[in-house]
Length: 204
Ligand SMILES: Nc1ncnc2c1ncn2[C@@H]1O[C@H](COP(=O)(O)OP(=O)(O)OP(=O)(O)O)[C@@H](O)[C@H]1O
Ligand SMILES: [Mg+2]
Image 1: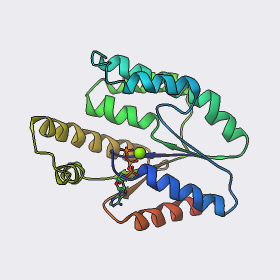
Image 2: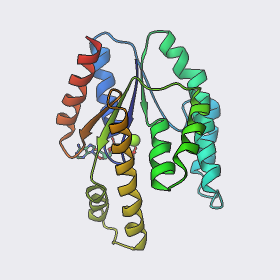
Image 3: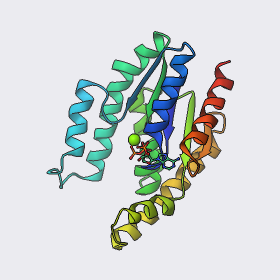
Image 4: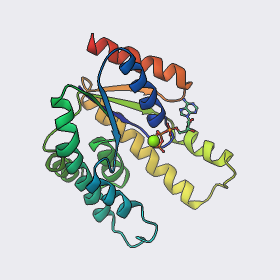
């Protein structure tokens, strides 16, 4: 089984995956989890290029292709073999993140992004995608509480993040068998118990 977690920064994906892995392992399942970009030696080098603060001149299309290159590598080198070996594979972000951010968020042609993702993943789709849905203003308010002031960039980012959220919800509506929407505006424990129930129901 191939599970992905999606949602905005700070929605709790990494934390929920850690808890879920422990839970599934305690029930005797073999679990493998990883994050994107990265997850392979080649992918980690690509991640360094994407994250390098000196690469201020990186064009958005270059960035999109680097994400896809890292993904192509982890699909072939890690995800497919682990699935073959019977692992439950859990990924912190996958192709849907590129659709949400580069497609809906930055308003690139959705069909073009979709074709690019099909090529990068070799058509490998998750069996289950959990969307940790969060109002972007809640996320930005958390940041403001951290001491930063509201500026022009925040206003711009708010519009972008609203499109990202709407994009996620549209994708979930288009493929309801694959997606489950969970409100991330609840305690970590409540979110985890909802996730565990969804997965136990599917596995057993
Ligand atoms: N349900 C929640 N309620 C309140 N705080 C939370 C909740 N879930 C996570 N947090 C806190 O929010 C922060 C971000 O959580 P986490 O790193 O798991 O999110 P993420 O979705 O992986 O973010 P990123 O995309 O930036 O990696 C952490 O400090 C975490 O403790
Ligand atoms: Mg994270």
